[in-house]
Length: 460
Ligand code: 16G
Ligand code: ZN
Image (cartoon, rainbow, N blue to C red; front, top):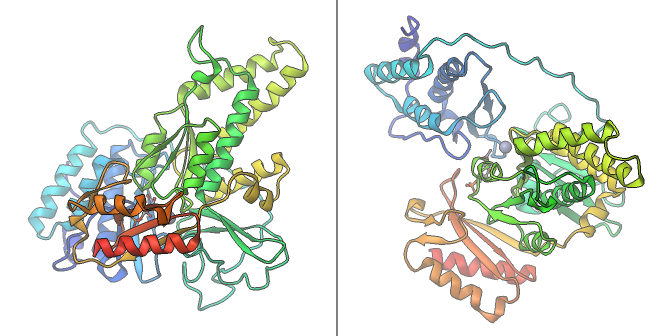
């Protein structure tokens, strides 16, 4: 197995930036655009190798810094199923990105070729793309509309969700009661927002979607009459359903789910962590507050739903009112599975799912906003620190492990009667920027802001 002639020379002509260690982070490489030329070129090469490793299937490269400002850039690799690059390959990506000399480059590429093509598998045929569906939407903040508009500049899911403010272009929207959605640059985040009757603006974030999805799917599951897993003796409740949240989930959403008997588990921030956790369930629902998320159905569950649907259709179960209801609910489960992108959170399919659920419930966005729970006010800060790596957290990032004494000091803050009830604060090092993030929530915006400020003083 040989490298294509001239490849090394081509790569050597675009050296990596001096004195910079490039890392494949939470979602690929992220940096100032001018530092990433060599990385983009090399990820092209790596994508070819990954494709060989996957039997010739299509590999994707997403080129954008997602929600970041236009000076930032990013590149992440997508596996054939549409999911994030297999974790074992993240290390290969970093090694390749940082190789400096001709010898290093050669060694790593030959090693990767050997990993990718041990037995020269024959390429499989890629699945043809499906024809696009039509949806009647009004687009705002498009590049055509205004030449000076940059990606994510005063708009986009991050601007709206983190800043808790409407995007640019919404000035005339008060009193119209319409619902709006904001995506991010690579369309894997979605948040909704609207102005109510009084002209007050409201945000519906990932937590609101998680709860809407969980409510809808739990109801459908109950009404479907789906038999329990296993051959006999089980109960319908033996199916394992859970919502996976991160520490950023609004406490009111967690409480609502638990009160309804829907299990909630926590995972580290980042799609790959929450997705991995959700895979442990028959139905795993995950949405980060920032709008990333989806629903995944386990294999046993997916099969059980389909065979139940067949049984109902064949009339094996009697034609009663009950079975009519069961049929509708089962069809909803089947359709939800087909509509939702189970490979990864996808703003477009999430939007279609939300639209469908609202339609079925007969809800407008105000009903969705009021009908489930009311968000606790929250406040986020980002702190420039000398070295964010001195800070580390436990597995689900709900507690700081180092530096020593930090969590204890935060615990003292949370125990204070001034923040009771509902006061909660946590800190974590960002996985995408050189900062430490602080999140606080409490019964009022003022208390949340004060709690965030007090926590920042402890960090400094
Ligand atoms: C990335 C992650 C997102 C996470 C965010 C946290 C993906 C596709 N994106 O954008 O899930 O919420 O990082 O950023 O995994 P932070 O570590 O800077 O707070
Ligand atoms: Zn994104």
